[in-house]
Figure 1 (tube, rainbow, N blue to C red):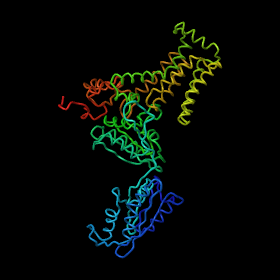
Figure 2 (cartoon, rainbow, N blue to C red):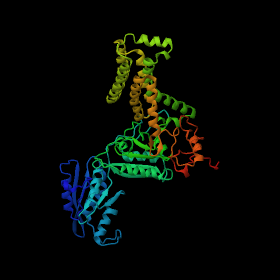
Figure 3 (cartoon, helix red, strand yellow):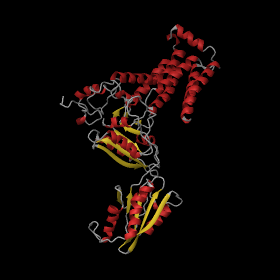
Figure 4 (tube, rainbow, N blue to C red):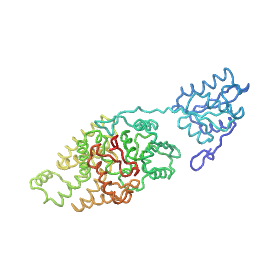
Length: 531
């Protein structure tokens, strides 16, 4: 059977007009597949019987729908009365054989979503996706009836990106449910949904969603080329596809924004961005993406502009603390203790009087402990995970202080760093800060404040040269040649872009879409009288 497939795992067998030949191929393909259901029956046509064979997979196909719309109309009604091809039910061009096929396709099968298929590979692929394939003796083609009914969890409240105001729904693993949640928010025919499959064996469905009149065509074309660039066995989540789509794989910073919130995806699409939805994944990824987007939350736009700006400012401060506080503490206490006030210096010395380990070892022990507790809390069930996180941190931290392993100051520093990382709304982005925190600890332990500043400078240089599909990662702080604007107008555009940076300006002020939107369609807010 291996000879039936090519290098791309595509079935090379052709559909035969002899239905028994097709059934033999299906039996060999789905041998030892207990969930595959196949049924053959006969219909009477002009005094003769014609064999029909259908196949579907139990569990991902709707059995009752198949029975009501396919089996009952064909096997029951036709077997009762028989069918004469010259009956004036409907008129078709062509011979009686073609009339029979059209009658089956357009009249007897009582469903809307049905199509013809001439490829055996596409037929089998449709069956594996939950559709039902109908073979008719004498025809080298099949009918594909949409009968998908996957076991899915219902649309639930968003837990990973919870907010006080705004919609509470979130994406689930259903491909069509996810696209429907976006369609529900953008009721515009210009919202395009380009579908395809990725993975030679998994054949995972994906959809590229964008506003045709807002997105730059080269952005969509770039994403298409990257999706078609590789052949891979399977894609099970959007995170796997994200790794294939990025250019600088060595960078820890994500160039896609991943989210489980439909309102956030809809907002990104109407700003000229592209969303990619993957089947079996509750997270949708969007491009382009920059540093600022990953620190934004939906609450920023649903709350008053002053409240949203304050919350966003807190996140920027938290991001800085999450990456710098342990390294700064090491640099100050080891190399530059003379910079500390005398009272604070005595307090640190008193706290460390019973500690036997160096300060760097102290920090590393506590950081490892908190990361271990965090990982354990994720793997355990919800209530038990929260208990481990809180009780474990208190008990283990207090025990470590009493045992003289770490000082109380270090516990405070590490705890504040952990809390700051939790304030970052994007979990993937927060993980980057937790990782780079150890890099700053390393540079600070080697060269004090000089190493601390050098480590931050290396990160800043990397961020400055990083781009997401041609858009600078640090936009609007860094603006390169990718901004397709006249030189006289660049400064004005950057000022407009700063309205949604650290400062979240009022909605009435943000009248233009971002720089990556089509140049001729950047006005998103105006009065009805044209002012």
